[in-house]
Structures are given as C-alpha cells and as structure tokens.
Image (cartoon, rainbow, N blue to C red; front, side, top):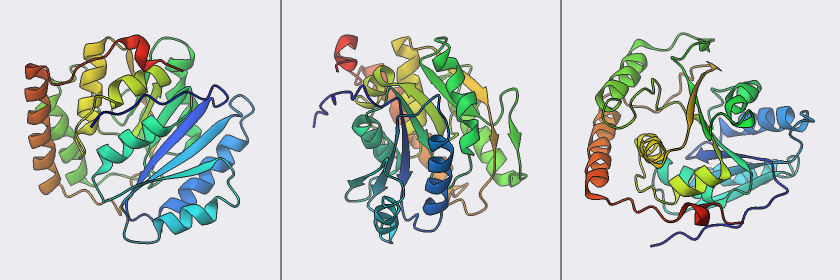
Length: 263
C-alpha cells in the first residue's frame, strides 16, 4: 500500500511526534512538560504535539483528549490495531505539519530543555537529521541506567553499526529530529514496524546522502521501561537482518527527491 506525501503546513515550525502504547500514566506529565516548555519559547512559537496511539488497550486516547482542553496545539492520531513503535512513528512523521519533525518517547526520559541542543545542527544548516545520543560527547544521565540496559544498547549497536549505520554510536535513543523533506523521504520508504525502525531510517538516510549529526544529550532513565533485554535483542537482530537483505535487494525504492519536499 502506497503512502501519499502530505502537504506541508508552512505555518508550523516544529512538530513533536510522540508514539504511545498503553501510556495512560506516563503520557500526561510528558505532554504537560512539553507544552510548558514550547509555549514559553518565543524563538519557536508555532508548534504542534502529535500523539500517535498505537492501538492502546488502556485510557491513553482518553487522557490525550482530556489534555487537549489545556494544550490547544495537541493532536491525536490513532493507529489500529497495535502494530509497533516503528509503524507509529512513521504514521506520526507523515501526518505531522512541521518544517522540523522530532520523535520523542512518551516516558519523558528526555527533558524538553534538551530540544535546543538537538535542533542546533539543523538550525545551523550543518545537518538535515540530528539524533540524540547517550554516548556522544556531552551526554549525561541523571539516574544510573541498569547494567542490563547499557549492555543491551551497546550490543545492539555493535551488531549493526558497521554494516548499517557506520559511525553512529547510539541508534536507539528515542530523540531524533528531521527536516520535513528528510522525514517524508525516509519514513515513506520505511517498512520495519518494530524496535529496529531507527536502524532502517538511519540507514536509508545515510544512503540518501542526508547529513546526520549525533548530539550528546542529558536524559533520565525510566525504570518502568518495557524493554526485555533478551526477547527484544533478538527482535532487533532479526529486523536488522531484514534491513540488510532489503538494502541488498533494492527493496527501498527512492522516488525523486523533489516529490519528498512537495508542499
């Protein structure tokens, strides 16, 4: 099934895409912090927050709809049935209107005050994609991450970095920014619905010639993480193998770049 290129609303500077699956408890404070920060920034006054509900079974949609009363820039996009984080982020990126589009996790592990650091390479014109990193220079954590999660993340990178995304130290941090053109171009070609969607998007972006900056950020580990270090590791490995196979077979057709920037 083909995905149509959405028209770009030139009145929106920034879109924050938040994928959510059964996030009725963690999502409301995250949305409140995002809105409080963004509404106070005169440099980027035109923004939207796009929550993509990934077929939640709890009250995620209800809490988003309730939050709309106090957050006028908030939108809810529903995906049914549950398909995975990759599919949710892809849907949100293609539904967003901003000239810059950011993916940010629902757990609030990344404080909104890290946005200027993430956006700096794009605003300076030195990169079209900027990715938050827990391992690049300047990265800090407020809470020590459990050792199993550190090992999980490092091993995932070790397994795929050399072949898919050489030179990038942290592919899985859920804090990434894209120009509208880059977002539409790479996400409309993405096919991975699960955890390894980051690898696919970055691999496609690198092969398309987009400049990618890796930025060290401050983050807080959420001890309520749903990552299963054993089951999810093998999912990432399997999906990474699928991405490599797709790249070799030329599965990812790339339309004319001008179409990706269509307004």
